[in-house]
Length: 263
Image: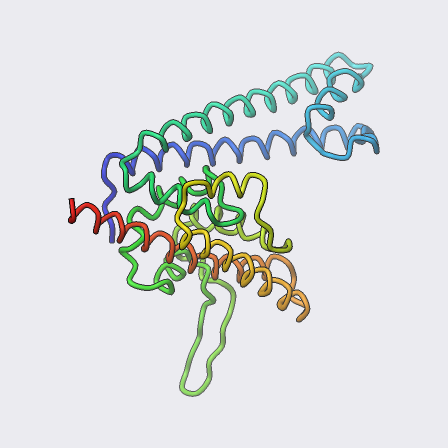
């Protein structure tokens, strides 16, 4: 059990507000896409990225209807998509500011977690906000169980059956971990934004991040070769990713505590 303090609770409310906005964005996009599909409009082949700025410009400039009522519908749907995008932008800016003004130990853990591929600032803040003190878990398997990403088990005597994941833990944490796990389908690589996020981190933390890339990508390839479907693979990779998150979080918190005692 862990009781969040005022700083953790405020940060948790903020990241959950962004999560709600992302769900609203997905629903708004689905409403418009199904409306366009039902009325015979399809995205042109040259617009390869859906919901990009050119895609929305195409909808606003090229999609028209004979009936004024339908013109109003498409205009309202586009307005809602743009409105939700502005909400998300404001919330992400607020999360960035909240992370900068967070207590020192929280800032240190947020920065260190970004050494992992797939864990940028918003994901790192979400993990810290949902978990609080990571070192409160005595081992990585406890954190995995808390996330609900471990398989369920039905045992009787010598019989043991493992089923789907329990999903009995923190759903917000589980969502961000599964999203991050998709990054490990790609070959290990350290550059671009990931390299920038690692600036100022210790070599030990960066080594954990690199080890995670190699191990989790290999895990992904092995499960794919065994014929597992991608959602199953990503769930398994996410469960192991939690082990690296526990290693980084526990190490940073222990170092912070030692430095505080020494001071």
